[in-house]
Image 1 (cartoon, rainbow, N blue to C red):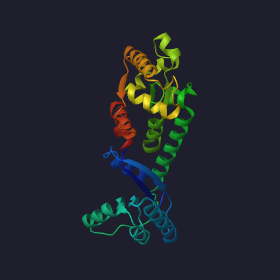
Image 2: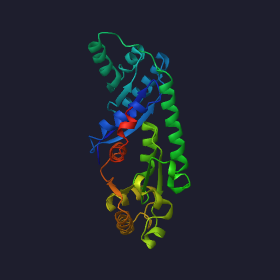
Image 3: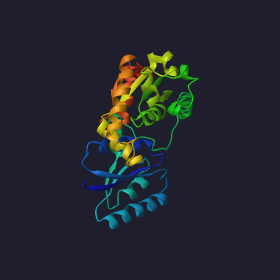
Image 4: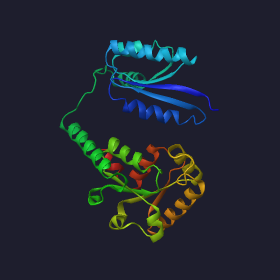
Length: 275
């Protein structure tokens, strides 16, 4: 049995930043099973005290300190959370203090600041990309693939959907995905909706043993999740993707963030998303 620890991502906004950075840190400890909880919009001292009670209740119940990873701008709110019976890492405090020292001035300590129309346009772009990813998930709609920045394909449970959503949420990239199924294996070629879009198409593959474990969590003891079936699907899908000359990414040991960055680099989109 792996050791288990509870982790709280605490933020005065949506919690996305705390989650992304926090989960990246936690991936460095694969031998620990983390139970993760996100607590967003902790933006007042009153809410901080409620959050403090929740964290301390878990500490008493489990008999060990939870881990708290936070992005809190307000000093008063942060000070309440730091009294928790927990191991606390506040990501903003460490970086903001160093920036204040380097720049020779205090930060605004204000929540959710906007910097003009450019930020509003970037925000709207991400919303549009999220809507695109959701409506073009799992091959639901294929008519608008010409509007996609990237299209992901591969067998079920190789990470297509979470990668598309991550690309949309973090970078405003329009990403669609299309599953390869037994019907496609029989034909041995890319499905017709994908054929005109090879230049923006990326294949995802995975170790069959890993795929079987993932699928067993969803449909235990099914043929869908059997190791034999997973091996057959992966072999057939890889043959189709190799025949089409696709760039193939092995997702077995990669996080969604790593898959996304690899695709952005290969597609030449890094300069665009960094503007």
